[in-house]
Length: 131
Image 1 (cartoon, rainbow, N blue to C red):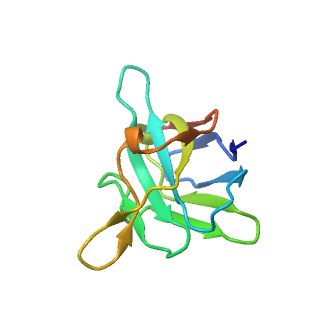
Image 2: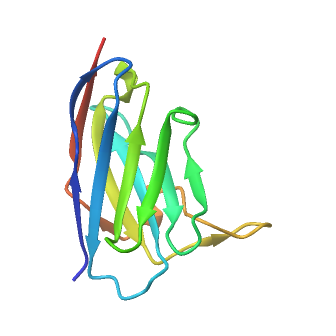
């Protein structure tokens, strides 16, 4: 049974940093796509960042490029989201997701970007950024 457990959320002031963690268990394949999504009240769930764990290729949403970094620790089967220069608009529930699906672009494998492409989800961790 696949299980994703997030941690690391909290409340910070604008300009601060947080690191989210997502520990995955139950996957028998070494290559998966894992992503972070977020959802603020009244808004649709949006893709923040994603990574193909076997290749390291990544995707970032436009609003977080240059501020957030996704990484994967193969030994721990844990994905991290380092969030720097946080803004009040980053306030949301952050969800970890995983899927065995990858996409192939012209240059190699890339992770899916849409929530519906992911099959497994964590419970979420709240991030609140105050101004």
